[in-house]
Image (cartoon, rainbow, N blue to C red; front, side, top):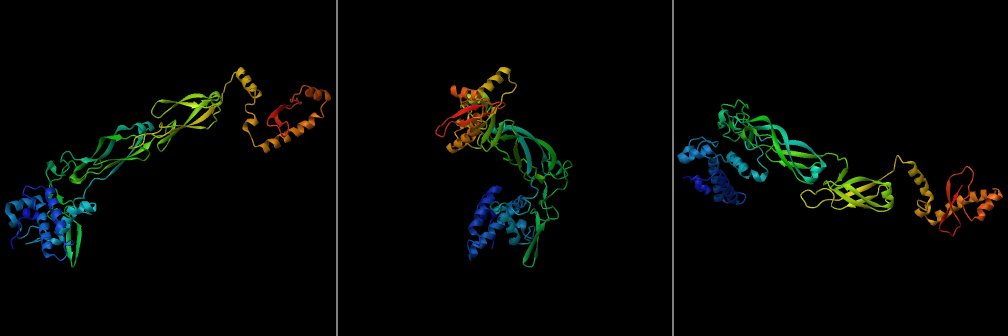
Length: 426
């Protein structure tokens, strides 16, 4: 039976490129695969016919020979299958790996994966402001690049490598032992599928040289510590024109002197004067975008009190909007006071009820116990003082008793039914 034309088998024209041939064979292989057509001898024959046609036409040298001499170019040998036919056991295995390897995560071995450049890692440290605004920075990476003298081919003068005759360009050789087929890396080409007669002197036939290259990296707003940026094909160059690896940039955020970050929120400690904390007022605080925000401080603000500023935090990665900013007040204690200022501060506790225990409003039973405990010893001592002092204090209806060598302020309760305290100074 005469063989059909290989182009007719694959249903393509003679001008079809490699991608067209690959798609045509994939379509026929899926259509006539024995697993999809169990027991169908005609489908199996079409499947083997398509595999044989693609095995010849996918190779440029074999295709050129076929276009010139037809099927006669392979009569009597010249192919891995030996004289007179197609080695289905070995040839189809390579074709299936090549055509359907994309769905399997790539081929497990062979010339397609040999020599691919290694992936590289680069640690880049940026400021918190750069993480907020986004930035474009230039980095210098020492790596392997394609050789300029041989254009990455590894052959002197830029000549193309030739197909290895031992493995016919597959990068692996197989040997049959009974029912088992053993596959190993081709010893002639080292798995590349190609050999070089005259290696390039600049790269030693590897097709790459070591060099430092400058790259521009775009950092998006909102990145955080540990964010990874991938630059495809910017890793090490592959061997003899093989694909380059990728470059992975890992970001590190420098510690900031004012702000601490937690996700998209930032925290800041803001000092405020004692007078502002006491009487209330307005303070300006810096924000991460470089502007100043006004914060209203209410009367009686305590040390460590927090205030929230909405949408004043960090940018959100790959999204609109911002986080929040939290400020914590640090009440400043005045130093280097003048004599007048010290006198005013000493006078401060004597005026009004500011800072007295009744302002803290302790539980009623606690106030009663405290008042009785403090009042009892004072009342006992008053009764043993000279009558003139006792009478003088009683006649003026005052509760301030001056006891010798005692300067402590004691707050006592006038009676159990009173809700206010009175001052007794000794």
